[in-house]
Image (tube, rainbow, N blue to C red; front, side, top):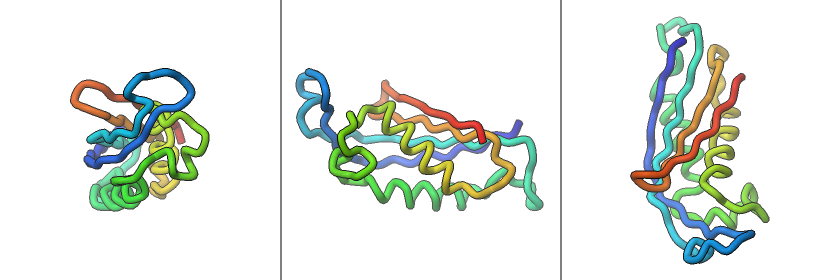
Amino acid sequence: MYRVSVQKAFTARHYLIGGDWGVENQLHAHPYRLEIELSGYDLDQHQYLVDIVAIENVLEQQIALVREKTLNDLPAFAGVNPSLEYFARWLCESLSAKMIAGNIQRVAVRLWENDAAWAGYELER
C-alpha cells in the first residue's frame, strides 16, 4: 500500500468543558501540528497516490477555518468538549470529504497539541 503524508502547523484556542480540568477550563492556545496520511493501493496516471500540492491546498483550506480562532465558538464544536481527540476526528472527517482522489483507501490524521502529546483518528473509504 502506498502512503503519502503532509504536515502543517497552526495555532488555535479552546477551553475544555464538562469537567474540572483546572487551567484547561480557561481559554488557552496550542501550537498544533496536523499530519494527514493518505493510503491506497493504486497510483494515478502521473504515478502519484495524490499530488502533494493538492493535499497542501486542502489542508490550508481546512486549517484556515480554525487558525487563530477559539474552537468553542465554531459551529462544529457547539456544546462539545473540544478535546484533542474530538478535534482530530473532526479534521479527519472534514479532510476526507475534501480529498476527491478515487484511489485513496484510508485517511489518517495525527494532531499534536505540543511536542509530547497527540491524538489520531482514521477512516477507511
